[in-house]
Length: 77
Image (cartoon, rainbow, N blue to C red; front, side, top):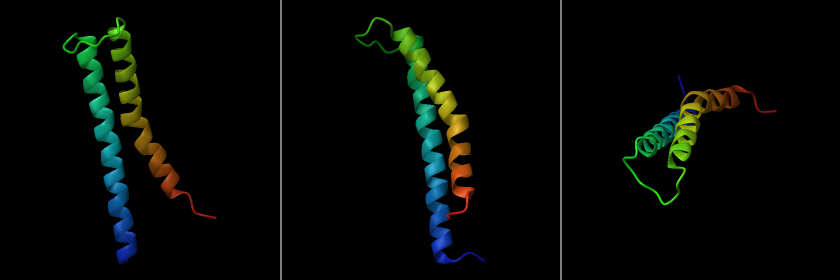
């Protein structure tokens, strides 16, 4: 059985993981909009900016939650 403090911490961590994934998904969507010329920005290399956003979003979606989980599992010294 979890204590109320442990349960509150687990809820915060669950929310943090989902917010990281949501932000990464938004990065990918915005990047794809730039790449497909659905959104125009003043910068001429919008395709490159879009590809960079997509790459960062994909890495963020798959890597950051694992980094957070690994960080949370290490015992505090």
